[in-house]
Length: 208
Image (cartoon, rainbow, N blue to C red):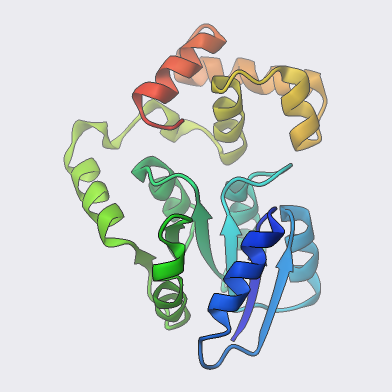
């Protein structure tokens, strides 16, 4: 089994490596500090599983997930997130993720998750499964932000957190004009009028 870890914190990558070395059959573990590094490695080497942080500098984990599933559809991707909310898990699973783990529970669940995903299954924690069941049973299943692309969703979250167009542009390596265009498009899709509306919406829907 060949595994690629993508997380912007070296201490997290090192910790995950130590856990994964306990698994039988793990031949190679490589790591990347951002999405572009991960894509570069995938271009020259085949990996069975990519463990991908959802919150990365530059292109978000959801965007990298989307790219991986388009270019290397047979590669299994296990998302790792600080966010336990079912909204993130649903979005990741819809984009093709094979599993979703929170960093809070990764130390207990990682090996089970990797084993299950390597066998062709999918993995979500028991607590998240319960949340998803409630979510699917509620009227909130179809929410406004479901219409956003991965990049639009990421920019909306950054705007909701109060980041300026310049800060967002620097983080995702695009111009202020491009970010402004995205902002206008997101406002239209979400039927909102200003940045504070993003903040209120994201708080109400537990996205931040």
